Length: 158
Image (tube, rainbow, N blue to C red):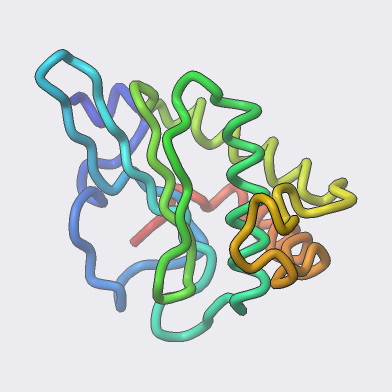
C-alpha cells in the first residue's frame, strides 16, 4: 500500500508509544491484503489522551452505536465494524477496500455532524442491544462536538 497516496503518514502505522500521541486523532493503524486482493484497513479513532482521560462507558457505548449507524450509512459497501477500545479512549474502525484519508475523514466528519442532530441512539432497544438502557445521547453529542472542534488536527498524531 502507498500510504502517501492514501493520505496517511506511514510513520504513524503500527505500534505507537501511547505517551507520545496527541489525541484526539484519526490514524490508519494497519492494513492487510487478502489472497484475492481485498484489503482490510484498521483505523484508530482516538478520542481522549491515553492514560490521562477516559470516556465514560455511557458515552463510549452510545458513540459505538452512533458510529455503527453512521458508517453503515456513509460507507455501506466498505464498513465492516466499529468497536470500543477496552481502555475507553476511543474506538476501532475496520473498513474493506477503503483506506483513503479524505473518504474516511469525510465520512467521520459527516457522522459526527449527524450525531449533533440525533434525537435517539440507534439500536438502543432490547432487541438489538445487550445493555440497551446503558446509553446517553447528550454525552455522545458532547464528544462529537469536541471532536469536530479539533477536526483540523485529526491527522496530527505525534
